[in-house]
Image 1: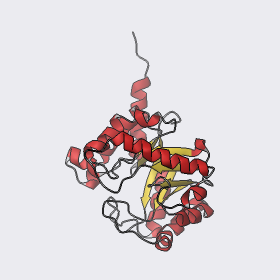
Image 2: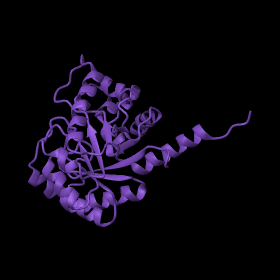
Image 3: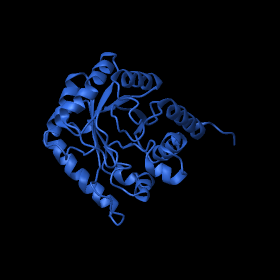
Image 4: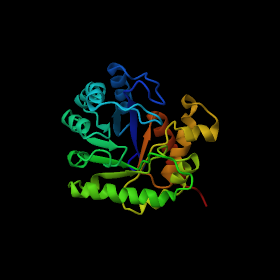
Length: 262
């Protein structure tokens, strides 16, 4: 698997996640899911305590940590590599102290002015592009590149090592379905910045627009979108179904590398 995208497994410890619908809100359930994702081959288990779906209800840093703290601590104690999915420096600080090794910030260090200095202590930092509004007429890549120019400046000023940074174009965040699909089709435009790229299309509503499937029936669509991202050079994939993605990636690689006669 060394030459294939690494898999980040999703654990949403929230009552209002668009995909889990609160089924992992109990810490014991979230811990069990994290362990299963790691055993299935997740390089990182990404634990989040605040929904970021459209129209989400913000929570305080105290409440967010109350949700994720036991999960992060338990998984880290098991030796599982944990990423904390948060835009709050206070939560990131607590998670790193509890054993998390990575920070996944859906606002690319631009929501909380204290995040960059905290994230500098992580082994890996995922910076995602985000928007507060959807604009079908947006010059998509100009906006994304300007956003990451600011994020990278913040990271460098805080002393974040560049070899620890991964960029995420933000599939499903402040974009139309067409714009989301363009992110994958034109992923090479983001790769020109010289950083590894993560794509997280798993179960997103754009896949429902394409297939007509409800959220729990988008496994195949998620794999299809992520294979397209892998073909475009994605280094990381953020997924709900780790085992299924791992199998698909292995077969995809095998089909592309098999020796043929003649």
